[in-house]
Length: 255
Image (cartoon, rainbow, N blue to C red; front, side, top):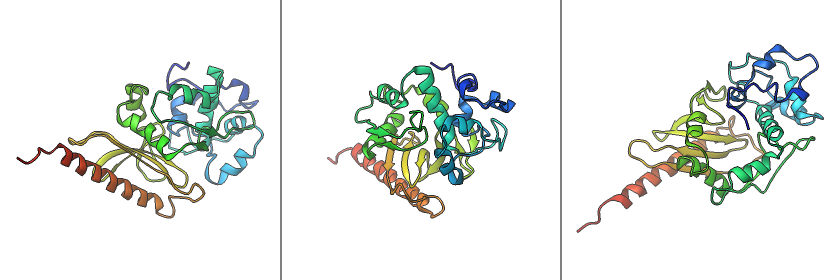
């Protein structure tokens, strides 16, 4: 349906562009949205409330001023993910929820019960998916298993390639994934508001791949309080314990 991450978004969203669009809109690609490098003013944090109160979230996002050049520094914005959702709905003629259920339905145990939508009926690309912790874990486990026969391996590699640096933490950031190290191991993690976390530990140093999901109070910030760091430590303890258990299970039985 789309030719790749280098595809410009302006032709795909032509009906929602401002009357006199900034020329830089023509330079934004799908990849820029996925890596939070669109350059448009953030519609997260202090701007989030006004954005979701607008009549048309897609048009409001595209009409925002530029705070950086496309492909430049990271500007984490829920609107960037929402534009991807709008593009998927447009090119497929189906809702993003229907696509997720179809394309990811082959992952055992994965399910999204519901998903908030904007005034035009487009599912919110950045958040508000109703799913269980177990469902979140199955998604991460599929990534840890090299796609589980559902997610293409080349896409996993692309999504985990560093594109920019997070202005939250200074860590590398790919396509939707923060790239870091926990408990001495490389880790890729998704970080939702309040501490909704999915950690994927690729196989490394003879240790098997692993996935850890943690959910938290969705109404409290997790970064300024140090809570996110607490979750990282918890994930580190869990993956260390898993590695220790695997080593015991693999040890030869005494004679």
